[in-house]
Length: 202
Image 1 (cartoon, rainbow, N blue to C red):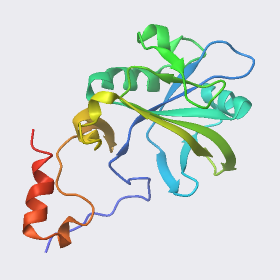
Image 2: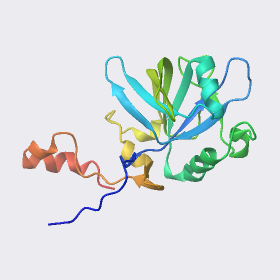
Image 3: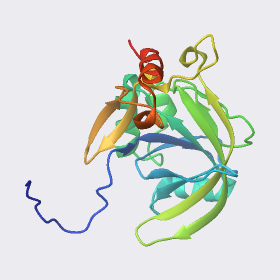
Image 4: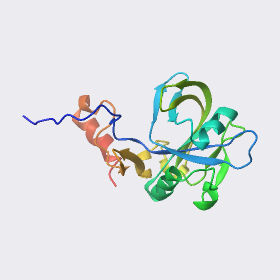
């Protein structure tokens, strides 16, 4: 039997998505990007996600002021930009300019832009803010989603595995790419399993 080593209680739920949150305040023209690994799905109907941000972060008041944010999914090609935007502050840098990223209007939002180079984004309107301690949790209702055309096949099926999305695993970035199965595959008939898995072959 394998042995477990005890460690202090911590937020070691991993891997988690590593995303770039783009935002802009009402009174400021310059948009900003904050890197977040503490993001998650919290509801289906209506679709909602959460992002947890420290009060002292520059983006905190921008999101609170406008009531909007965009969750940009990040591919491996932009992992360096993802990291840089997480260690530098928007108070000191124009992150879009520094990282040569393009701010584009986000569907259904007035202030927060999306990042054109990212493979997909979720437009969110803030529904609530919960003070938790070190972080405040913003719950956002997803009001629009956009995915790059190249991630769809002719039959209309979406294949996000081809984007090579970045996840965060206890201090390191990794690429989510290999398909191990699909929802319900453990119960699928052999012929169905073979047919479904064949579409993920590279």
